[in-house]
Figure 1 (cartoon, rainbow, N blue to C red):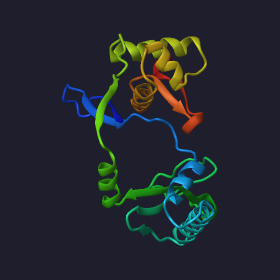
Figure 2 (figure 1 turned 45 degrees about the vertical axis):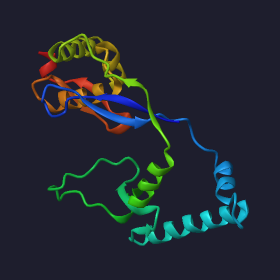
Figure 3 (figure 1 turned 120 degrees about the horizontal axis):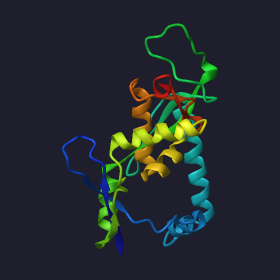
Length: 212
């Protein structure tokens, strides 16, 4: 029996209502050896044959994507490469010509995948029934946005720096909402809060406005 979770999502469009999204309730990962055995079951190929084919497909995908191609596998989907900046270097301003990157600072940082419609159709065919498996609601703060910003400034006046987790705790927010809100505050010169660093090393400090 496949179950789904109804998730409440934030009002990103400012329409005053939250949105409902749905996700499959996960039962965990299928171990690779079990998946291979299931693929070989009822056929003339052995589990070793399946492993060999998967390894060969993986190696050829890497070769073709590394050459700049996208690869479509009928009934499965389309694979392509994603580029990014390596060594945690800061991103360039698109209009800033003062910094020039060389090939050593650009690399493949991920693989994109778009499922073939036939795969999606087959997944639906294999899903015999669907039932509700629960709800996931947003964690709402008891403080207004202005109060949350003030609490952050007060916290920073007593501590050297703030991380997203700190903002989430003091304002009773989810990590995702806290991250989005702190980023917005740091971009507002009137908030008195600035950011330093990036990604996992990003922290928030009081700026000149916050010390007034």
